[in-house]
Amino acid sequence: ILLVDIDGFISNLPSKTLAGFKSKIGMVDRIREIFKKAGEDDDIKAILLRINSPGGTVTSSDIIYNEIKSFKEKRKIKTYVSVVDIAASGGYYIAMAGDTIMMHPTSLTGSIGVLAMKLNMQVLMGKVGVEWEVVKSSEKKDFMSPFRSLSDEERKLFQDTIDRYHERFVDIVTLNRPELDRKSVKDLADGRVFGARQALESHLADSIGYLQDTVELIKQDLEQPYMQVVTYSRPGEYKSNIYSSVSVPSQLNFINLDMGLDFNHLSPQFMYLWGQ
Image: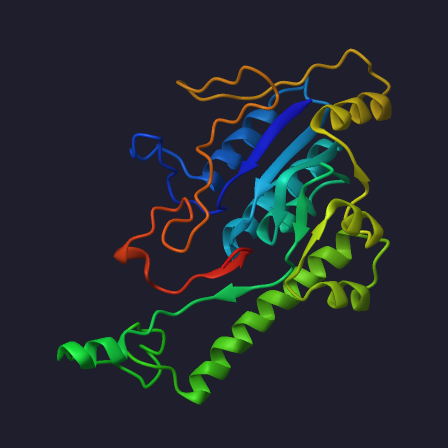
């Protein structure tokens, strides 16, 4: 059983160590690396996704989802999902690659939706007497600039993009949760999160239990009681048990979503993310 962690903010930005140094690889690249190695390992008979994430960028969530689905189709093996604290928004999107989802009794999931934020410093700049001049090739080239407000037409264009990403999220859930039709998914896709019992009753999850219960379920399904849980580690990484994580705990606040956010990252990003 290959244990794969989806932990923290989902992006391909290099993560940071506790000392503040950047690691060499982002989450998307790490997942690709894991499944490339797994594709060469005939001993892998099942995938166990351990998800503890509030979500992340739209594209990174989608790439990881597709990476897992492609691996499953190629190897013809099942993927089991264990939700630890939270698998919300992009975390739940990735969970859709699983064949069965087991939630810890106190975990949260859902938050099916999209958001994007645009910083607007126009009023502040006026107060301090700073002007921002732009030379552009077309009217809407800078409509996401933090130095001016959106026009009504630009806001509609922004919303149209959000709506398209939202519809894709709904499509992915509808495709992978056969108990739910599209209307039912749309009703659930209002951004709210669900506790374990609510998720089970709403058919967003399949069972409630702990990580070890998911391991036992895999052994039962495959009728192999002596299967071992393994992980792939890069040099310098170590896990003492299946509850250990190589990732730095997520810092869930506006300024630092474990993504190294600074003024170089103030451009708008479309996100499947809960907690903003």
